Amino acid sequence: ELRDPPHKPRKLHMTALATIAPGAFSREFNKASVASLSHGHIARMPREQLVEALRAADLPLLDEEALGRLPKLERSTLERLLFLARRCCRNQGY
Image 1 (cartoon, rainbow, N blue to C red):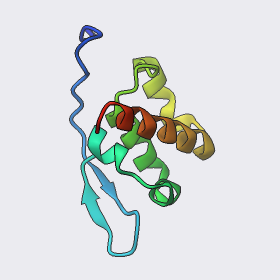
Image 2 (cartoon, one colour):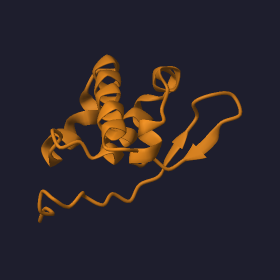
Image 3 (cartoon, one colour):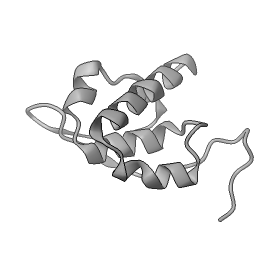
Image 4 (cartoon, helix red, strand yellow):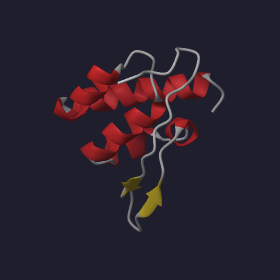
């Protein structure tokens, strides 16, 4: 599989349904939505949504192989990675 040059972000086409709170709503994850996640939202997100949000954050430390292993990680690890992803997205101005 060909990869984009490092200066170009990968384009991911995915939609994740977020059932974060009562009165569930639909959310497409992107860097801005990852940056806006609160601690409470992350704590209540199902594992599948944690994985989708991490993929959408496009972290430079997660290559294709690492992205493929995300679903196998423990929930606590996924949450810690998403807190890191949120910080990275916020530092990028999202």
